[in-house]
Image (cartoon, rainbow, N blue to C red; front, side, top):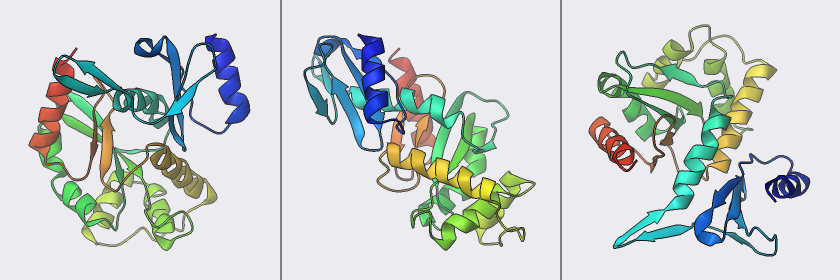
Length: 223
């Protein structure tokens, strides 16, 4: 059935990011996500539903959709041209969707060293909120085209200027791929992100280093 399911998804939504995953709580159904959201298909192929799937454990309610999205997005993000700031003593890795004109993104970036000091490596993913036809998208592409991308992103976040080199088509295509990932992720704003190592964890909005660290620790203690 899994092969049939993947074939069905490929034929109806060839451009989507696809991950087939069994959800035993719903009769062994399969799940996948695309820019339209997360969908679940029963193993007999007769029923499809979209939205969040919650699992009840005693008095706790767990959003299994967040976990599925986090796991499914990882393989996609690994293929993207992210800008990485690596922690010297890496314990966790997170991906963060960012926009150089976003005030909260600038705040996160100004505290970047605090995240790194806590062992959190950050991979920044470009998400120009004004869309791909905006000047922001071109400016972010010029950052992603820079010879020293981390330094260029830091300067842009500080308001210290952009690289003089005009973005190439390849750089614009890179921003487009990252922007598509943000749409699939169903961003409600920037910064938003997810864990890329260890147990799944997603977050929306600005989180200080201690909040991110505690969320990562809590997620990994569930295993």
